[in-house]
Length: 199
Image (cartoon, rainbow, N blue to C red; front, side, top):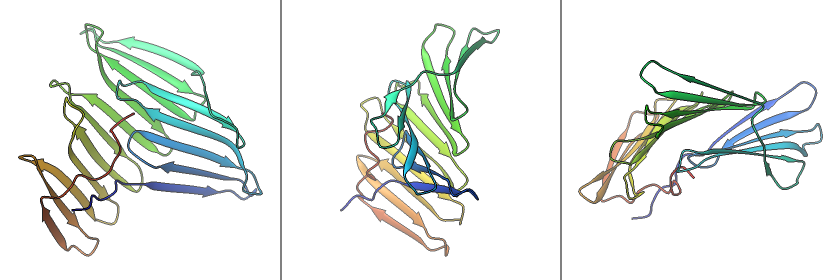
């Protein structure tokens, strides 16, 4: 059976001065923010990618130029009494990245936040990974096992519809609930094409 695509979200803000901001989530673990001038031409673009390792890279481009990595404008770190540490990196108010480490300094989580929403990557005890996300239009979660194979994907939309795919004994089960409340279940369904997980 043909696989379904993952969720792509586009949000756009048109301002009275004619400028526009467009935010696109083309896949899990990535966000593209484009500021456009009055004539619609791209003035500046930010590309935020969440890597499998938990590292978040932020790239910036002027106009149609190539995107280059940028450094955070501020970085802070704090530890709790149990030894866990949070490192917060702010990128000029465009995006905020928070890394979490346990008391032995091992990476455990990354959060990427902005006006468009939030993504949270967590390393599970079995070394698999879970990525959850939320924005004004939908929220969901995807998970990969220790071999980087997708084993679950679910998303719920603001209109009450939802989609769920889960790995059941090496076979997939897909459950779709439409905005009209109609539920469709498909057995032996291919996993949705959501890339290779967080990049």
